[in-house]
Length: 362
Image (cartoon, rainbow, N blue to C red; front, top):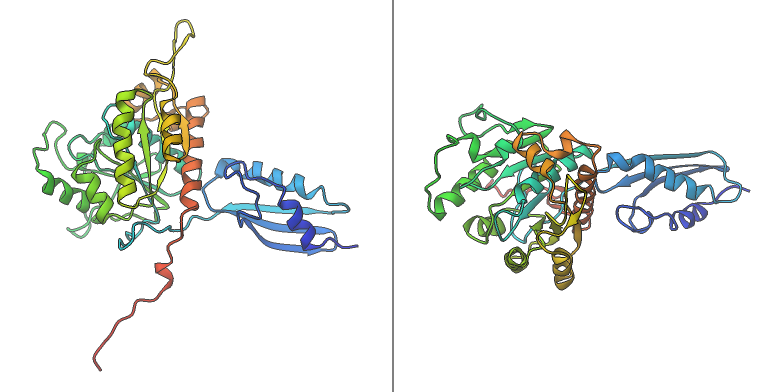
């Protein structure tokens, strides 16, 4: 007796995606189920980049299908497709950019830029096309962290070609000024510079643009919230009470302007002594998780206070590319996958599916 599609669907309802924690049927991942006698073939199309997870998911699905009595040959193809998701109401998407992820902190010195660059690199390592916009006009750090020098080209005298490093497309005010020149600008000039960097860069078909925001809740954050189509925001904090106070302000600002909070990353959560191996919670313990619970947002992960993270960022080769097999790089990749899953759960943007209506006098 031939296998039925109902049997296949029933089996896959018991197969859980380890990245979304949902079964593959509920997650609408299963496509093109084909049954020939007792042989089954199907496609699994994930909504998030998961290059490192394809074999694992294929095995989970295959093992679950093997529980069907009498099943024959099994073929499972696993891939992923990233689409545009809606941003704030009334803000149009930017050409060449599907989704914008803002990485913010209410306070400086919590490792936000380091987290942002490793998040971008982790998304790229999972197979996504990723860009990095350094929105810290006063203190751009991404050129140093990514080891990029020189100035961007302009082919038409108006737009800029993004710089590239480690598979990322990058833009920063740091490419356009002398490193030792202070940006003595008032708010309106800073916000105009941010808009120009974002809109005048010729981004090439990005799945995600990670925006490294300056600390605080000032002009740049408000400009981003009001004029830039942000899919969601990631808040970076340390467990320290003084950092959490400011991180809460940043979170509330995004909530007020209707930008979804994708989750919270706790940086410098624990220090392990390189001499004796003793673990110490230098900046306190559990602050990020408590904040997540208070605001009902996801706790994306905790990163240690580790000298290698600082050394590798200063050397222009962040941890995810320098030590891809390290425990720290794996934490960044786990955080990146959860961020991508949270983006995928947002409402899709269908504006490109509708033709533009042009009224002409005839």
